[in-house]
Length: 392
Image: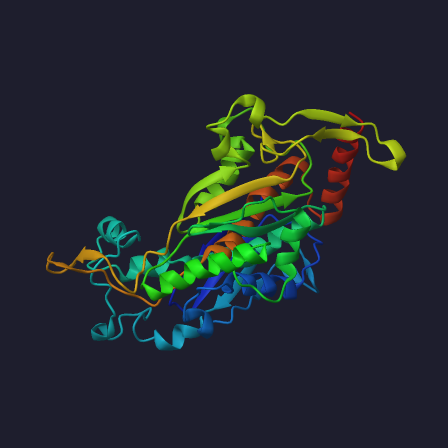
C-alpha cells in the first residue's frame, strides 16, 4: 500500500518527503521531479521567497540506477533561506534573544488556533509547519506517484479557471491543459490568453491595494479506467477520497467534482450524462460513451472511464501587507496582525500541489486494486483488467 508523509518547517534546514509502497522497477527521471518542483514555484503574484529558493530534489533512498527498488523513497529539499534562520530557529537551546516571535495572530491563518492548541506564547512554531511551504515536499513525493500512474497510461495536469473576478468561460481540452505542464513560461496557468490577461489585472489590483487574492484551479486525471474506487463503503468512495486529498492543502476551502456546484441548482435532465455505445466502426475501440462529463468522471464513488475532474477553491493568502486587526499575544491589546514575507496570488502553485495530492490518492487506489511488487507485475495485472472491461 502506498503511504507518504512529509516533515520540515518553512524556515528550517530542509523539507523531507517519504513515500513507501512503490513497486520496484519504475523508471525515475530526476529532471521530471525537479520540473514539478519548478512548476510549483512559478506564477504571477509569487513573493520574494521564490527568488531565494531553487527547489531541487535530493533522493536519499529507494532509487538506484534510475529505478525504484521497492524500498521507501526518501527525498530532501534544502531550504536555501536556512542560513538566515539558523540562529533564530536552532535545534538546541541556542540564544533565545534571537527568537523572532509572531506576536499577533493573522486572521485566516492557523496562528491563533495553533498557539492555543500547543500552548505556545506566540505563533512562530505554528507558522513554520502550517505554512504552504510544506506543499513542496508533497509535490516532490507526488512526482513519484505520477511516475507510477504514467507507467499505466494515466496522466494528471491542472489549470487555473478563476482568479478573483476573472473566470475562464469555456471548457478546456485535455490537450490544452497538458500543454501547460510542459511550458517553460508560467503566468497564471490559464489555457486562454485573454482570460489570463484579466486574471493578471486582478492580481495587479491586489498588489496596488496591499491585498491578496484567491481563485479556482482544476485538476484533470486523464486515462483512468472505469472501476477505481467503490460504492461499497463510505470511506472508499473515490470522490470522497479525492475531496479529502485536495481539501488537505493549505488555503483550499471547498472542493468540487465535475459540475457539482452547477448540479445543485439544475434539473436532473440537465445534469446527468446520457450513456451511449460505440460499435467500434472503422477500427475505433468498442466502448461505452458519454454525451457530456458533468459527473466529472465519477458516479457512485467509482470512476466511469471519463476524465476525472476536481476543482479546488482557494482562499486569498492570510498574510496581508495591509494587515487586518488582531490582538497581541502578550498584552491582549488590539494591534495589527503580524506580517511575514508572503505571496499575493498562489492559485497556479496550488494547482500543482493538488496534482500531487490527486496523484497520491489515485496511485494508492491503483495499487490496492491491481497490486504487484514490481512494475512489470503491476502492468500485467492492470492490462488484464483492461482486457476484462473491454470484453464486458
